[in-house]
Image (cartoon, rainbow over all chains, first blue to last red; front, side):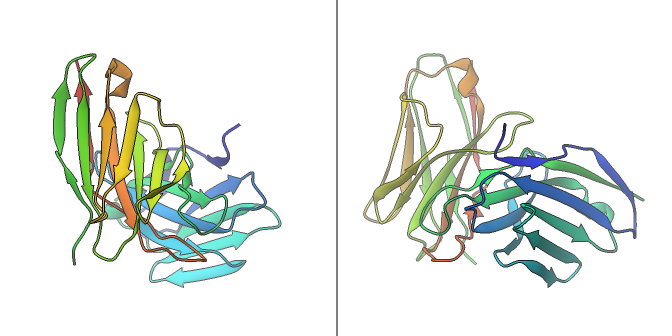
Length: 113
Length: 114
């Protein structure tokens, strides 16, 4: 079982609607959580990171973390066609240090004009 | 702003050959990570370095080795290449933080093994 799970999609959302992306993780010791966006053939770009329970907002993006339920989500408001990409959830399993992030397989998001 | 620089961007090799990828982190970033991403796959962590010492090791094959130099740049050496090594190889760098290491990725090096 992969340590970071995401629904691979595709998730299709009409333009202007809210896109909701979910991620669960298995290690309760996980400390920090990241959402990256990746266009095909390009490198992952950081959208947000969160390490405290609750919500964190940045523009159209809101990350939500619930450590008790071991899930993290990303909401994208007013979805735009340019948001169409694969969204990777990543977890730092040990917290801090120079440990590598563990990525989920990503959710392919399609914003329909 | 300066980003993570990777070279070469594209590399074609034959089976059993050797390849070297280079990564120049963002200035003042002291931690470097290497990831391998196969077609349609998520990035797989290979190895990381902090202050020129190996810090964490992931699914890096024994045929691969890496190091970080005094100027913080890193090189990934791959020997006895196999067809399955064809992938995008990303380098990422981060400043060393206690709470959350925010990784910035380079554009990647695409390795094709024929």
